[in-house]
Amino acid sequence: MATYYTSDTHFGHHNIIEYCNRPYANVREMNLEMERIWNETVSPTDTVYHLGDFALGDLDNALEILRRLNGCKILVSGNHDPKKVRESEHWAEVHTYLRIGRNVMFHFPIEQWNNMDSQKTIHLHGHCHGTIPRGRQPKNRYDVGWDSLHRPMTIEEIKGQE
Image (cartoon, rainbow, N blue to C red):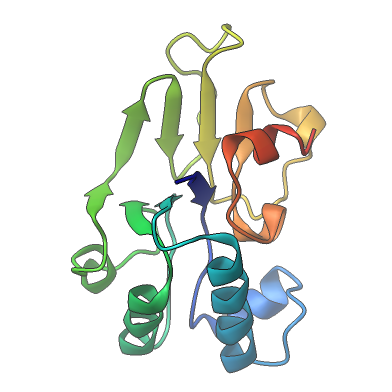
């Protein structure tokens, strides 16, 4: 059982393809490919923290995708997670901010967090779609968005991206 992190999948969001230069011809192709990548990465017994902006557009279709995605899925909601997404029965938990052990999780990047100077604490976030270069972020803050990592990743994999 592994623990993964991701955010900003934007299932069903046509405009995200252009905004983030995603390599898909259309939403259907994007949804299918991201679902395939997720399920090849995450097993049914793993846990995935999704740090917001799961879906926009056809929410019924997006919630069907959510149902099919592997893992125990926990949402830390973002600015584009409508009520219908947040209240889906397919989330094991839903939070707006979450701290587990030394991990601080929030959709938005925050400049300071408790014990941020310790090598043992990290802040995981989304929202930025890979627009903040690694060298411009505080040393223990990581953008786990789909446009940064291109799949859910473990803490070790995320730190290895440096």
